Length: 111
Length: 114
Image 1 (cartoon, rainbow over the protein chains, first blue to last red):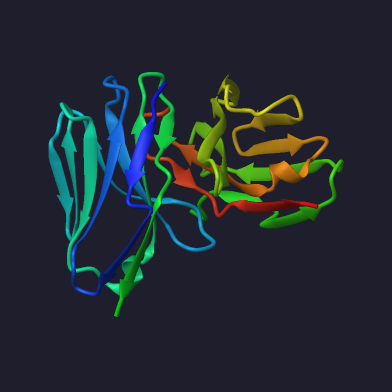
Image 2 (cartoon, rainbow over the protein chains, first blue to last red):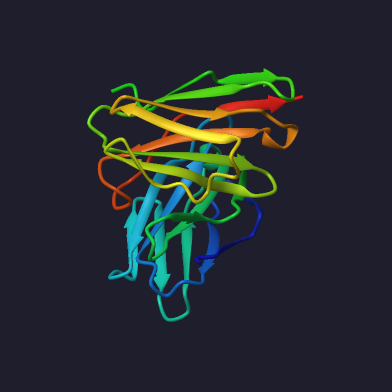
């Protein structure tokens, strides 16, 4: 089945810097890659997603890139702010339809 | 809309007791998912319903776990008997189609089994 690896597990940046989180997946049939943000005590919330027919997608300070050949995708956050501090999860939807989540990245943005 | 509603938010019980977690999906959504989140295993899908019918329960750990969806606005996840290793945060999520569309997560139920 699908396996998703996410790195790094923790990331600390200064306010205003960029943050990059990377994920790899194993199932070449996967076609949907969402990113979720989870704040303390809350459920994950979708922040951006990308489908396999697109290489890059951007929404204000957040962008996601997908390399289907290498089977990896990345989340880029520019001009980070303290409120970006949270745990971020990547996920891949396998051929069977399940969302398989990465282990999460705890992002800390220091003012 | 109030979003996905889960109850209780916190549950502390003793080993061997029955635990029932409840979920109300977003009105109009026809797919419902139960997840378990732990530090060791991350977010795992336990079971998925579409139009109130269980479609994929391959993630249910063992027979002690059961889930029902008697109607479009209510689902339960039951653990009987509970064990300390069941301690986790359990999330319910819903979406307007099967796996295709965004899944909206509830706030979760933090379960502690002593």
